[in-house]
Length: 242
Ligand code: UDP
Image (cartoon, rainbow, N blue to C red):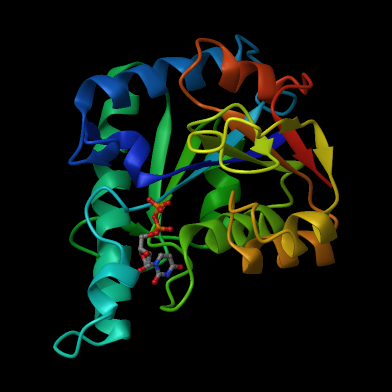
């Protein structure tokens, strides 16, 4: 089983007025331990669960925020966002290693002093050695987000599915934090997830790419003990988009 786990930048930050900002080392350590549970104890790296993690950068920079003014162009803002994901990926990489999780950090944006470039062959080699791969730099191109990067990387690495970690326990008919009538959906088609304007769980571009390639997406709640392991084991939690 090979899984692409998408963790947003906000999930790595401290809670500040409902938003995740900065980098919370304790949260990152907890995520490392949860990923370790999901990897299991198999000595056989060929049959073991393999996990690649695409990290976002919204705890530091989001291109949409800076891009909406005259002084900073969209491309510069998005590039800053991608650099933020590299900050997260490299910090997270050290924390994973300190928690005893064999880990390699790679980036789709070249910052050779800081992190190794992503290449397909390098990623496969790390997987063969039993390492978790943490990917910074998104797709390496502006005007998209790490959701699209996650789906793209999952397709490239032939992952079985994308596990999208969120604040809530799946996709709801409306925003459950503001609409009490919202109900949880266990399974939804790509088309319905794309066409329903109330569903904003993931970029529509990412959903479109997943749908074109029949790549399932499981949306699940990150902050529950054991949830990453449950998703990795194929348990039916959260919402399955397929
Ligand atoms: N970004 C980009 N290209 C990519 C991935 C990310 O330009 O392939 C930029 C974009 O500005 C985005 C920011 O990096 O807003 C941070 O990524 P994202 O918003 O996906 O982070 P998350 O919301 O998951 O924390």
